[in-house]
Length: 478
Image 1 (cartoon, rainbow, N blue to C red):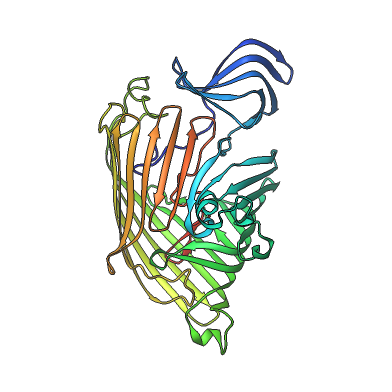
Image 2: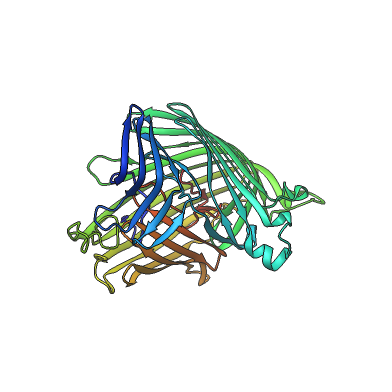
């Protein structure tokens, strides 16, 4: 379990697999087997088994193996069998989506409930290309009422290229309609070239990026679309400052941005829309430190104790997290926005998630205070939430079922900024997580398989194509 209370398990590296077969023949490249069974469960009978009539394993590299299977299927608890829609997979250390359809909810861009499935068309040591067709079920039934309407279909695509050991390129695109007349208004795309720069304090990243119609979420201001952005950013690693326990990170960058504004003096006479193009320089730095107040001991890693419902034993703990961040933004309109943000949080996790009832409780209470001056001419990075209280609670209800809620409030306006509800079915070898945010009208249903690197989106905005903005700074995971 992660150190964030209520953190949902994610597929980790492949570190424990058992297999048996009716017949197996070893070859210089790997092996061939008949009636094979592969499980990630260290105990018998296993909770989850991958079965196939025939399978061939070919070693691609020291860390990657290709498996081709005939009639592959997942069998849960020796009873429920689900056929897999692929006959080829690559086992390696990189996280990926499971080869199953996934459901999501996005009211703004996709009309509500939708279904999608990943197809990894290219996967090598240097190039990965993934295509994800989507069907917008709710829009099909309640809006268009026509199965063949091109507005019912969309797709995502992502290309990752490792040009050199220190240089990479990532391109991504999302299209939420196949109606050619609506392409430009329903396309979101970006391309980023990143150069790793090794320094004595760790690897820094210099990235050049262009984005088209970025979808951002800026607290009480809600969803914002940045029409276009072109620029660069220099990002540090997390730098540990000696024995102080402090962690420092910083970044700086410049971009030419076209986005919405409410400044009439910038729009000029008779504007066609509310967008304006400005240059922005932004720099930020943050210091973080955690204080562990108490840490318990995990249960033994046995079938009926520490590993009854989770892939790793739960460690109870209580800690305080503190951080301060300074952000300075300067615009070619001669505007500036300066913010000093302080955050303090109490995190706790109790129980071991082993007994049938109420044996797991996790919570967090965070307070964030922003002091500053000036205001951004744009909506997407304007600071408006100066005092924010965030709360979360995750609780085992019965057996493998856990329910969670996390919410944040603007204490000045006493209005909700965002609220997420979670329902999780957690087993040692697999899990299902249902998430819904009624404020943002986004949600997902994710499937996890432990130790196969198969995981669905479990982060607050995973799968929604939404990038959150905190203190005027875009928060991205890459």
